[in-house]
Image 1 (spheres, rainbow, N blue to C red):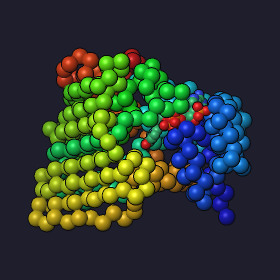
Image 2: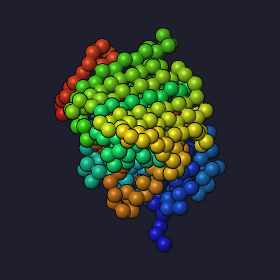
Image 3: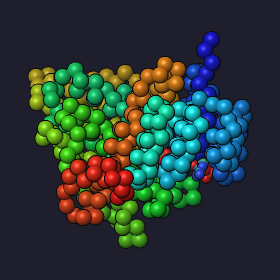
Image 4: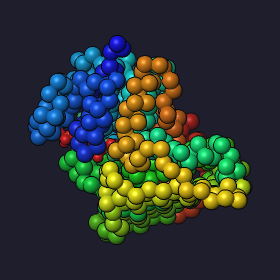
Length: 355
Ligand SMILES: NC(=O)c1ccc[n+]([C@@H]2O[C@H](COP(=O)([O-])OP(=O)(O)OC[C@H]3O[C@@H](n4cnc5c(N)ncnc54)[C@H](OP(=O)(O)O)[C@@H]3O)[C@@H](O)[C@H]2O)c1
């Protein structure tokens, strides 16, 4: 029997607990260690996962624990130092999105990963969804022709504060665009892969709270690809429950998918995917339940395959850099009040500068 892939988990907060459960529930994976700085989270981890070694310091865990994967689910400003340490220790790294909060940090992580053969997966788990991932498959089949327009839209209740309030602290979260819209930039760019890289982007945003004007409740961006196809990514946090929509129009047909739940982590959502091939409208049955809790399980299974079989990550360092880069360019577009060329972003990357 093949030995399970050993995971050491940094972060046992709201999302880290779901990572721990997904690892625990996967027969090919084993949770060997967990880090959480607070006593309360350490006690919760020890109770739920008695076989795992519990640490207060992630650097110590990475240095001491014999494992195959370091899974990083900590506040976003800590991603660079932990990812660099884990890659340097020779571990495969599963790094939650955003890859990091600045381009400089993303580039440093990408370089560190390249130096060890790209053993890094970024947590863009929506690609593994039976719904959002299925859309990519339908596009690849040619059912709707060449995609020309993509809309990814979410309306939801406000974000959680995060441990110690990091998610509402501009310095530690970096940007709220890096929180949820980053998934939608990743999906839109993936759906438009055959249209060439994004070349131009404009974004608008506002906040309903004068005390945090840069943490936007409402955010919308458009980017255009080389061949003229374009995407709209839009989100409001000033709403209720969790309702996500994707629409793609192609040269032949179109598709429309919707997901609704009381919360993002609902396990009993309503979800649909309608596909029009230019002649016939079909509602596609979803092969598995859709939702981030299910996609996370798929992400852990994909990570096991990366380690065991050496398969490429579903979203790699380049994808992480692109999605974070588009978010940071959107921030810059809002700040400057104008459309920006993506070449500006690439120049910044090449120069090693930070936005
Ligand atoms: N892919 C997705 O769909 C998705 C969904 C949610 C979140 N995320 C990402 O996942 C990350 C964590 O988000 P979250 O919602 O779980 O945040 P959270 O609830 O605030 O949890 C953060 C955890 O990290 C721990 N921590 C803080 N600093 C640390 C450090 N230096 N070393 C080790 N552990 C540290 C905290 O410890 P204490 O508990 O002891 O305070 C807590 O357990 C963020 O990057 C977020 O953007 C991704």
